[in-house]
Amino acid sequence: MSAASPILSTAQRYRSEFGEGMHDEIVGALYEEASRIASQAVWQEGAERKLRWDQWLDKVLTSRIWGFPAMALLFGAVFWVTITGANVPSSLLGDLLMGTVYGWLHQGANALHAPEWLSGFLIDGVYLAMAWVVSVMLPPMAIFFPVFTLLEDLGYLPRVAFNLDRAFKGAGAHGKQALSMMMGFGCNAAGVVSTRIIDSPRERLIAILTNNFSICNGRWPTLILMATIFVAATMPPAFASAVAAATVVGIAALGVVFTLLTSKLLSKTLLKGESSVFTLELPPYRPPRVLQTLYTSLIDRTLLVLWRAVVMAAPAGAVIWLISNVSVAGNSLAHWMVSGLEPLGVWVGLNGVILVAYIVAIPANEIIIPTILMLTLNLAKSSLASQGVMIELEESDIKGVLTGLGGWTALTGINLMLFSLLHNPCSTTLLTIFKETGSKKWTLISALLPLAIGFAVCFLTASVARLLGWA
Image (cartoon, rainbow, N blue to C red; front, side, top):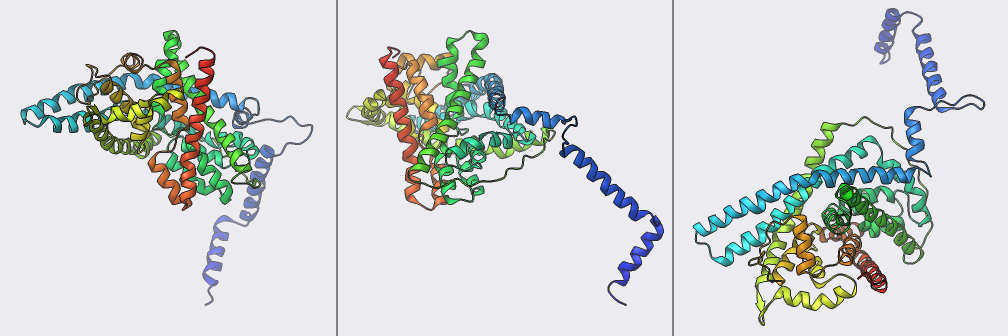
């Protein structure tokens, strides 16, 4: 018996079961389906063109006129929901972790007769830094990541890449850089790894060196807080949240502008070459998988990023407590560090405390604000602080501390937002860049290039503000 005999027998059996017309029915169905697809995809001149709802949506979201306003509107809505929704849970978490639990820990330390330096180091330094990170970061991340993932799940992010493709090509970069840039809005280390989708080594290197201009999750709390207490606070309460959201969107859009400008600069100098073309197939719109999105966002993004922030905050809190309490020649180490950097900080519209905070917080951007507040309170020897302790503060109290004790102005707050956007990548991202490029030279450039741009932009802003008498 040949190998084809069972197949022929099966074919004969099916032919008997379905009858002689089966072949015609299959061919007819194929033509019918082909006709249906052709009627939707091919438009004949003179005939009325009927668009499906998703085609109408694409005409708006990928339009040269309406695409960018729609993009700004959608991301503005995401930030508004994040800012508005995070206020109450942040306050409740702050009451619990930096009020109730903090008190319990000190009561326990006193009951155990723990040395004052030990309880200060562990509770006032390590614990408070972690408590701040959890109470400030968890609520906005728990809102932002699911909403952002829903946009991704719906198929909108590839349309953002489509809108930005022309701009990246004009900057001498690859259109796929828009996708790695969008990934950088969650985490710059992940954004750097995602540049593997770019085949050209030159264009991939441009994408790596400019990914830092995408605002990662660790920088959102700083931007949201500064926008709330220095920009939105000048508006009527009814518009405060919307103004804060618009300010954060504006900073994010500025990051896209700096990505394009720096890409153009690199493609004309260190990384000369022609842009390569690519084909981007827009995926169909999909119905949102809300429960699955909530679960994956909570597990894969929110808790993962929060854990990383807490791990980084613990040693940083210890360093902050030590430099605030170890004295040399009658003053703390923090005092000497801040005094040494104060002239440079004031020159660029910041101050010495901010620059020290960015040195301490190289492992993670998430701890910039708690570091600034801890240093400000301790250097001012405020009654709010004791041995490096930072107590729970409301937004109005934070503004009072920064302006009253730290001497901040609106220029300081605005320049902090700009410096947060343009400063060097965190240590995790730098390590990722080194692994991806295998080059100490490009890793060093990736750190120094945005830092130089950050100082230059802040100096320019401060100079203009002082020239106009605004600062």
